[in-house]
Image (cartoon, rainbow, N blue to C red; front, side, top):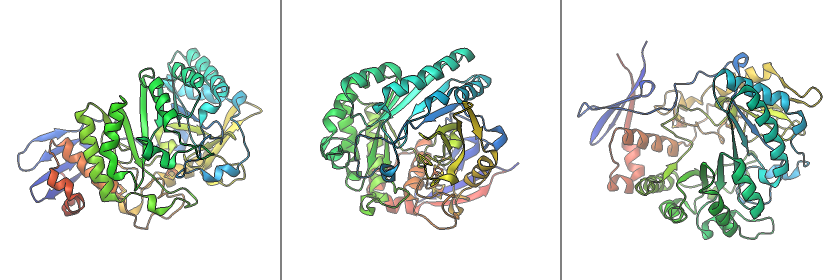
Length: 429
Ligand code: SF4
Ligand code: SF4
């Protein structure tokens, strides 16, 4: 059997990159480097074998903020529905059964198109049901939650006692954060987010900050890392702002790829020197990954109206608007999950493919392939799109895994440097 291998050549050197066997060979020195991977290359599941070990619940469409770059603008017009908790036991049992079969913990998440912690009582009901089911199967329940952090003190204390992991949306110092993340009244939120972080950071075992990056903040990424270091935050995920399904994001907010990559790499280097972990989810070398579709993360994601969604952007199906993304629902009468296996099979077969430009790319095992802006449910995948951020960070990850440092000069002219790298696929013997 042949495995893919890529010659990566630039002015000063040459690497041979073999992604499936985790090998990078420095062709000049002969040194071989291995990439530490957290799992084997995943087989994309067939509908009949879809057995997720994670359950993600979108509790409602309600949020207390009015962030100017939010991807769920249209949810403001959706009636307020809250998750059908009473009908959850059958679905929870099915997930717990799948976890027990694989000797894995039951991962339960709350996020998606709302602020989950506006409903602690509802979360408590879901936790109680899932914990009882996990206990019955003798597996661990690990609950996670994302939050905007604009919460009262009592709720934060409650949350830190209930979650194994929390992700806080926080973009940096006040002048950066408050530009986009305001209350509906327009009031700034950074002070209260900082108080929330102070209460969570040393109590929640897996605590992380997710910072959205715009054209205004891209050049300030190292400064943002310093800010978070002063706040004693150790784990940060940067993500450039993306377009929503209606195309309502101001195009000028999108960061320039060169600007983002140059400052992201500088911020990552600085963060590591300070003992921090700095991530970019769209191109991760430590995982084999595809798009952000929950179905490929072995995650059953359920909307407030009880539908099973294949897409994290499709947070409801109140008026059949997202019927294309749905593959079943919780039956409120029988309290059992009802899968539409034909829809699931069709979604898996469409979404498992890659856009045309990704099909021969060196980075295709470690890239989100343009998701969510590029999606094979919405396009043929034949159009060209700009993926320089993912490609260049993918290359930087390979350099780093091979023990090569990108020099200050290369960083300064990072567009020219990355564009000058020649990548050629060959079949290894
Ligand atoms: S690839 Fe499409 S369906 Fe999957 S998460 Fe991205 S936008 Fe959603
Ligand atoms: S770097 Fe670009 S071409 Fe390569 S897999 Fe990612 S999106 Fe596709």
